[in-house]
Amino acid sequence: MTNPSPRGTYLTISEALRARIAEGAYPDGLPSEAEIGREFGVARTTVRRALRALEEAGDVTTVAGVGRQVGGGSQVAPYKRIMTELLDRIRTGDLPAGARLPSEAELSESYGVARGTVRRAVHELEGAGHIHARHGVGRFVGPAS
Image (tube, rainbow, N blue to C red; front, top):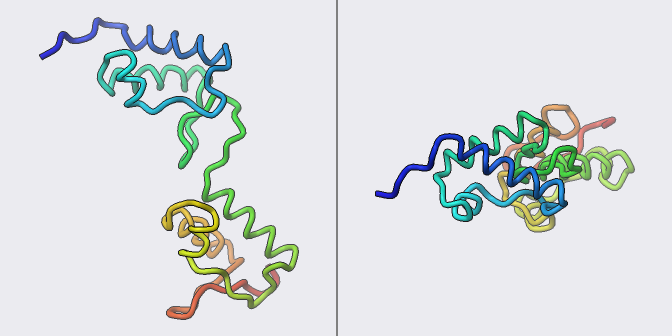
């Protein structure tokens, strides 16, 4: 068994990551917990404590479906992007009232995301009343969306 890391190691890691953030080293988001753990030779729980310290300080934010981003980043969760784009198509008339939406599989392939991501976006639009499902037939744009 390897020696446990000394107390406060997470603070050292968070400071190292904070310095890299200030240098602009992570424009596309922070590396995964596993990658950070390998780099610093620590357990994932130590990495999580370091990242939590950065989040509490506002240096890092977590975006569902995207990962950890530098605070104030403009990344949007993929399901929200899909929702926004479908809603724009509905509002511009590209998908008029009564039009059938592409299937989950088609949307998944066109957006390059998992079906669960598409399903979440579509479910949110259904909940807002913009589309409705007909069992065994498909999903359709609701009236006056």
